[in-house]
Image (cartoon, rainbow, N blue to C red; front, side, top):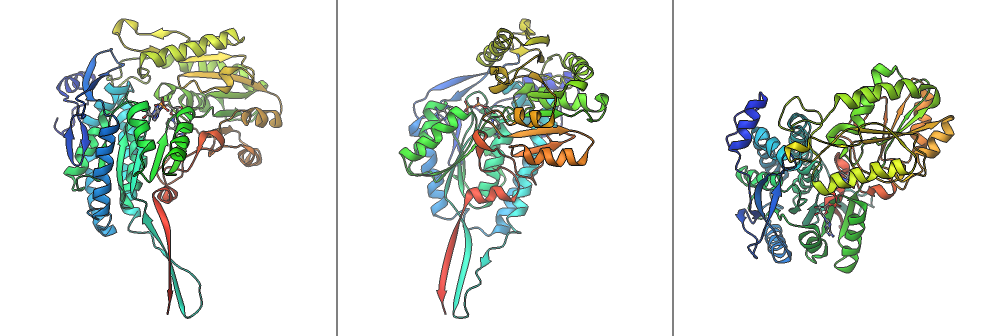
Amino acid sequence: MSATPTLASYEEALAAAERLAPPQDAFIDGAAVPALSGRRFDCVSPRDGRVIARVAACDAPDVDRAVAAARAAFEDGRWARRSPRERRRTLLRFAELVDAHREELALLESLDMGKPIADALAVDLRVTVDCIAFYAEAITKRYDEVAPTDARTLATITREPVGVVGAVVPWNFPLMMAAWKFAPALATGNSVVVKPAEQSPLTALRVAALAVEAGLPPGVLNVVPGFGPTAGAALGLHRDVDVVGFTGSGEVGRLFLRYAADSNMKQVTLECGGKSPQIVFPDAPDVAEIAGQIATGIFFNQGEVCSAGSRLLVHRSRKDELLEALVAEARRRAPGDPLDPATRTGALVERAHLERVLGYIAVGREEGADCVVGGAAAREETGGVYVEPTILDRVRPEMRVAQEEIFGPVLAVLEFETAEEAIAIANGTRYGLGAAVWTRDLSTAHLTARALRAGTVWVNCYDASDVTVPFGGYRESGFGRDNSLHALDKYTQLKTTWIQL
Ligand code: NAD
């Protein structure tokens, strides 16, 4: 498909979707190749249940091939030994090419995992392009160090790429999550093997081809689509992979720690889930000002956001007015066709996930919560997978719907009386990814932010994010940070060179 804009209206988006030719093969050593076994899996669009591609089902032999290509590329220095300035130039061209193809990529993303086309363009594609360009620029502005030794010695501390990086990513922001890993890894000179989620392999495959078109040498960026227990495990257990950057569930994150222990002690960084609280204090700004943002905090991307503000902790004095406004917000976000530019809530990623989300709503009701809006599947006549934005009231901190990540558009509402109580409830899960504080008082904001155990705290906003600031979790939300200059640490290792003069 051409890089010319085509998505000005719903009709144009539908027509462009018909013309799409999704990639179907793995991308290894600069070329599109089928799996060695010849096996493929159906890539089903949750928009309407249609099969949109039959994608190569990679397994251990394909992962071996991709890792071997990445290793060969790394060892001969075709990318790693290019000067930072040359790497910058290629990566900037890559960012421009992704930007030029943003509509095609946004369509692939929207069809593949159900997100609204407007969000795919405004968030996923914008962030991906920014991320690649940021690390392209960053790498020419980082200096190494000279240690303060005595006059007859010179000790330099330099950063070197680690070698072969495995990037294992989830389906909720498929391209963006992959870029958060491959952009800093490539900028620092590594070779990369991406394992996209089986629910959403298309954009990573397309982007790898664009990288080669931009001048990235073959073998430096490879993509192996396939299932977790086969392709994912093979990458995690591979003895020639030096680092794995993983984003996904805590359950699979734990497996990657085990894979590292059972193989070559590769470094692992984990970005896992969350159950992020939004605390509304008595002096929070007006409901008219905050309800929309709180609703976006949970309902954006169908609630399939690791940092979704899925627990509303509201002071008793503000609860009734806020809940009324949030119910209206939920109704305004009824699911629609992901390809319609007016749609704010698209499809869930797959049927099994819909069952999981509905299962949690049922558990909440059984535990005594009150479902005040939503609670059911929607748009079933389309053959797609949709659920209504849902609010569960009268949730208590110990309930499963207050403790476990639902990963759908389901908000749990809890009340509190004192700030201490709010902080205890907020910190009372095993997670620690994000948290928000809504207050007009500067001291309340600072003191609460300090007391919250979370990688990001938002004050009077939700989900603000930028490539310039680190993103990642405390506790079982993982360790290691994506974004910002700090992410470069994950893909480099320090070398001391001690010279006697
Ligand atoms: P998941 O853990 O099921 O899958 C993530 C990746 O791991 C996929 O590529 C999958 O194929 C692979 N995988 C699955 N089983 C595997 C196995 N046995 N061995 C090796 N690899 C395996 O997660 P998901 O359902 O795709 O994504 C949802 C989860 O991701 C949620 O928990 C969400 O919170 C989390 N997430 C976290 C962040 C963050 O930055 N903290 C961002 C986005 C999503």
